[in-house]
Amino acid sequence: MDRRCPTAHPDDPTPCVGPVAVTVLDAVNAGADGCEHHAARLLASLERGRVYALPAAPNGAAIRVFTAADGIRPFCWVDGPRTGPSQLSHAESRERYGR
Image (cartoon, rainbow, N blue to C red):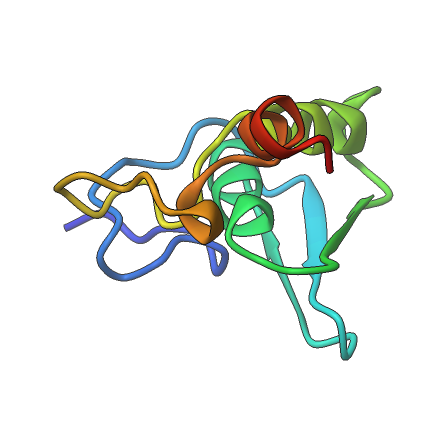
């Protein structure tokens, strides 16, 4: 099995896309560096998470991750109906609940 970036959840079966480009921090500043793909999926699964581009990141990497995460449901690799309020993407929550 190919090695994946630190932001890839062990249960997420998807491969990395591109180089390690950003750092994702949680609410208490614990962080991990990762590719844009897995960083967006991690950021979508965090409350009050943040993303920062690494020094050698391609231009716009952090904003691409932030924008992508907005439309991704938390723990999107989990099968089954995931329609509860805490299981919706940030964009879906804003649309449904105005938050």
